[in-house]
Image (cartoon, rainbow, N blue to C red; front, side, top):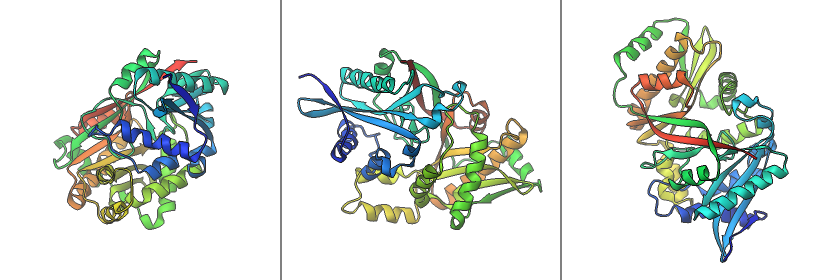
Length: 382
């Protein structure tokens, strides 16, 4: 039977789109099933603030009455306005959320996504990006042997060959680093931290969750300044910020998020999250019948093996200075202590970090962390 590809048009189609990976990855011990409600929200325009400046078309591949593949083709209008040298820019569309049983299905889905992007006037395709750059960008190409942490992706090893055989070339690599946080940092780092503690100009403070909106605004201002020249940067919009707040607030803890002030002015931040995937894995994607109770119990006082640092930033005026690395080391150390003492964590993961971000890579390597996963973003002219 021939493979047919059709657009997703109904709520039932979206549910089918979300359900497919649960079958394809059923035997993969390192795939973490997402909550189906969250996965549905990601692809439902009314529930995802990203759609306020983006549009997408989802596709399903079917064979003999069975769904055997899926893909999303999408265009972020804010990404179209960004400088071309930063990865996006005019004419750049994306694809993502892609899974398939076989290579021929995979190739057919890619062709359908490219066809849709061309019909929208796009001249270059970038992927996989699922769907916003702030969600799960890149294809896992190294580090299949252990589960991803919260907000990081997983994929089948064969996908890399399938994408490259289809004519896509590497565009950018995103790295994550892991480290043993039960061990003290090297002496040179400890000296830098102690020096900072003697500097009256520096204050490293916890966030105040009771002032969530105010603290989020401070962090967002630093983020938009610190990351504005980075590859793939697209500013977060108010609807997206609202969504992120709702999604992440339950796993925000004051002692795991720090803001660094210099002369009373916020100049850097570090966000650390308990690895929610450790709690989600056993739920198999469903909160019913008892998953919700287990999750609520875990959220009251999580005990985890891993803490993830998804975001860290220092304002541009301090970047490449000794002060920037000093503030980073201080925030990392204070959060490391809290993670071990209060949450029982033994492992940290930092990233993703762009492969050409030498400043952050140097900080990660100085604290004796090592690359544990590599994600690849690909591109192709349309």
